[in-house]
Length: 291
Length: 280
Picture (tube, rainbow over the protein chains, first blue to last red):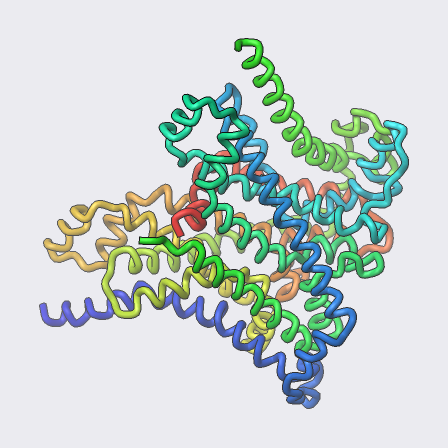
């Protein structure tokens, strides 16, 4: 009996150890490692070339026009794509929250993009938006409208990327809003109806305020996820044309793994990480349940 | 009043159908184009015809070509990777979820904060130092390099914790009084009644591994370990000529599997990802 009790003391450790050890090693150590690597230069090349350079890599992040440019492009991109996706996802959720015959079929169809990888989505839409052959230009020209360059012109490329990723992003985030809408008690909506509020009025004055926690959660999560956008840039535009889609994660990849300068790549992601942690911290404070 | 209601219905269905078309048409175009030859792949696109959305001049050339390039190997690799990740990812996630839901121990809140924070920071963000770590472990171009870093998943741990927290106390107390160990309670009482959580976790883990691209691209691009998404990207970009019919064929296969998986398990998938956001 005593033996068993002694064994039981270790039960929580037994259940927790695999997860906690793996999280620390593969999620938290890389964060520390990133800050450390940022203090060295050229660490992917031969061992002898690894040299301590202090904060030089961080200074380079702000002074190198291409690196800093990628931060600026990412900011513009974030300010457009995240509010856009959240807004459209809210509208889509309201649409599929309607109790009409056949709605389950539409909900299933809208779930399909969520299952498809960003990778395949990027390749497929890259082909569809091709200025010479693409499906979309085929339709546009058959309608008698002028051909659009889409991904091949600096004025349209970033917008095209935003459209491509929203094909997945909007249906994905709408799932969260749909659950939120379904959680609103019918009494509240009933009394709004009795008071003569129309659908639009009810949506703006009643549903949106009730969803504000979910909206905040989705806005932060979407922003953080979109900071790491890589596949469409790598597969379609390679940051171009004229750096118009040169987002920060692609720049970190290019510096670190194409040119082998892990130091500057680590400095880039360390700066991004600080931004993300601030976002997440603000979210935690805003969403903390009030008792 | 009835007229207004009818107009509302019509508007609603027009919107629903328009969005459904925006989702289905690109997919059916990809699938249809995967059954064409390189010469006929653009035939119905310009000038545009509705036949672009249906297979015309049916041929399997694109599929034959990609399977000659070992696309089958990539499919098998990814199934294997997904299966291993599901089994071990569930073990790791369910065990710790059980501890957080049911056991008493020191620093519980701190450790749970570690879990929550880990899924607020996307893994791709720290992908370059993770790459450095895995390289220093000597795990580049190995199965463990592909599998182990993704086994502890904050969302999965959270999902199990929420599910286990709802299990009635009596179900646990009875065997405990009879002298069962926690491990016995976990494997004989808890797991058998946790099918919904297990399915949710399995679907999320499998989809995540199937659709993973950035990590395998960095860690194991070798032909022997190549996964589906990397194989698709190689057909898509690393060729001198554009192998359109092969791009369409590989994309079709790469999206077929997750779509066929998510539709029957909709409820479990959606329930699983929502748990992470709404109750947090």
